[in-house]
Amino acid sequence: MERAAQPAVPLGQMEVFQALQRLHMTIFSQSVSPCGKFLAAGNNYGQIAIFSLSAALSSEAKEESKKPMVTFQAHDGPVYSMVSTDRHLLSAGDGEVKAWLWAEILKKGCKELWRRQPPYRTSLEVPEINALLLMPKENLLILGGGDCQLHAMDLETGTFMWALRGHTDYIHCLALRERSPEVLSGGEDGAVRLWDLRTAKEVQTIEVYKHEECSRPHNGRWIGCLATDSDWMVCGGGPALTLWHLRSSTPTTVFPMRAPQKHVTFYQDLVLTAAGNSCRVDVFTNLGYRAFSLSF
Image (cartoon, one colour):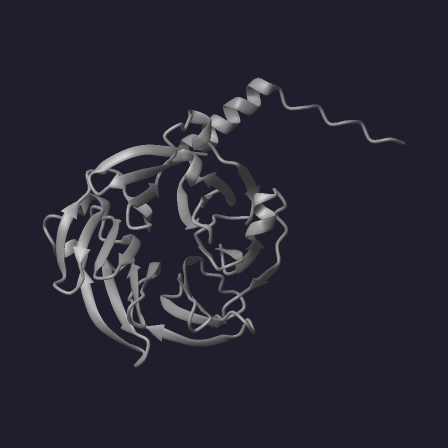
């Protein structure tokens, strides 16, 4: 007996469903492609969308240029973090990291290459992986998340090498200080911690929420996003999105954005992209003006 065909979802209902998805969407993660022309953004529905930055930044850009070129289902739960190697896009969700080929993604072929899970204390523990950080010279991938530790994975062998402990609550974000083997981490405890990987020790702590110009007590103290460029750092979350001078531990610019941010990126020293509790990615072409928004 043949199975009866499933009725198609009416177009109007599909449009309502998509509108409700966008209304309740949170963009947790972003990553720029190796060529610098594309931006991947991951949301709370497990989807990854690919945008053309070169098209959106063009003087002839149209509204369609600010929509995704391709969107695909990457994880069953939220895509908490992403990072790009020379060839791969790496994405992280609940307790696992996946790899995708950029060349295949841009051809709209999104087949998973591999997946890895960090060593956790018990087999029942599946904490979210909120942050990924690539260290190209060492060929390491640093992970941070719900177990409050920084894990290091060898990208060649897929084995986990070591872990760093110091945060008193789970880790949201990581950033690399490229001129030195130092990693910054931000967490639910409200602190940005600077780690020297040569000694595997914490060397600096900035408690952002204690600075009056950044503090937003009604939003909490958590640090949800973090990015560095030489001696500069941008971070935000509960506290306002703020540009900091690292050597002096001084906040210099507070950005006029009301909603808490989940991700922030420096792009070619000129463009800063920020995303959070919406379906949009805000693009800044200087440090005080939002030029436009990309949208799922």
